[in-house]
Length: 283
Image 1 (spheres, one colour):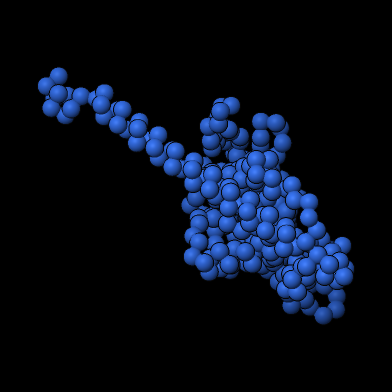
Image 2 (tube, one colour; image 1 turned 60 degrees about the horizontal axis):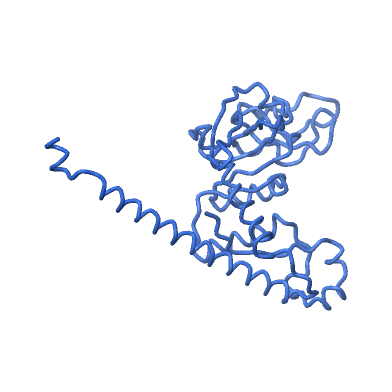
């Protein structure tokens, strides 16, 4: 069950480059500098951890997963994560090694280079093996797709010149590369720092846990009017967002209470219809 605990507004460049516009809207000084969505997310995660919030893993779409700095920052504080990436994200085979560069004319290169070439994520995982995994049963039936996973080194290390091309990256951390082939024919790709002994089913379940986040966003907007704010002030927007989150939490509390009541009533009904231990033995 999703429980939203924070919401922060992303300001595009059109806002952060217009001090007068931000002043009229009442944007606090501390929030007027340009910050990317991954940067905002890292600040909120740190704030949540400092407040005592605990969770198993961070999940995010490719808008966040494409950021090497975001992934590396999560790992640096010991968080597990599973994030979407574009199909062209470069990765190295897990057995890649750094070796001296071939001799050339002029001064020898001191930087070690990988002995294997980085390839796109879609190519690395293409040969599978792919397995069908059902991660949830909905009112419309089982939600399932084909998944494949392989250990890789992400090409997000220091930037170097390789094979005559600039802007190339050395191998970074060893992680899971996961491919998903949906029933629609669409392919999606993910990276995760879950432990090497994690099963494919566990990887799929963690990746698909993001569905509850999407469900929460949809319900906040469609049922509680999160996106219906029509004011022009920073304070007004955040008051609206806060009230929306409080209303959502109240409704989630009511759902939990109803579920517990239903479970207790079901247990009582079952106990009333089942024979006692003595009767069962006698039968």
